[in-house]
Length: 198
Ligand code: NI
Image 1 (cartoon, rainbow, N blue to C red):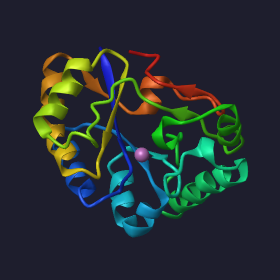
Image 2 (tube, rainbow, N blue to C red):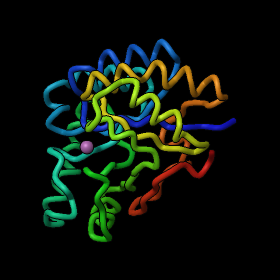
Image 3 (cartoon, protein in one colour):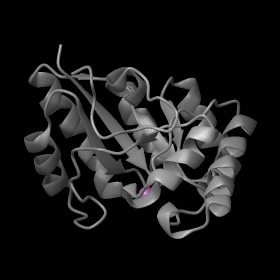
Image 4 (tube, rainbow, N blue to C red):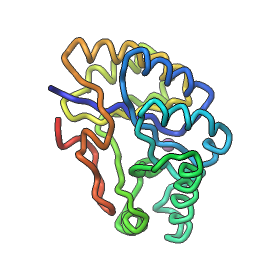
């Protein structure tokens, strides 16, 4: 059965709770790369996310380019957000580095904290073109078995695109899974951009 993984970055935001309701209506599990300062604003949304069985990962504390800060600063960015998630009862799984930027030094830091990096291979640029039909068209036309789809739940136009993305891809036989499921798990200190188990 062909699989894709929906991933949502930069939240939890004002539209995330509504997105969780949409995903529940469609019985779809997704992966959320959450930002520490957003978790502080909306810890209840993290608990709702976890209770629904979604995978929750780490997208740093306040979204710097990790390749542009010191290794110590990068470590604090990730460790702080891990602690914020653990405080909500969540065991964070994998890191999405802000802007997808990593190098060997960043991977070393992630590895030392028990994390691998997860990027994507389908990017509808939903943060740039805040237009629901455009986002739907770009995601559904680019989806392939094993795809990791990048979206941003901080934009209502992106959340509005999710029902049609799900129904279109399900009609093509796709199954929606988490990043851990589509990759089979990411070894600490390594990086992936797509699923190995399409
Ligand atoms: Ni981001």
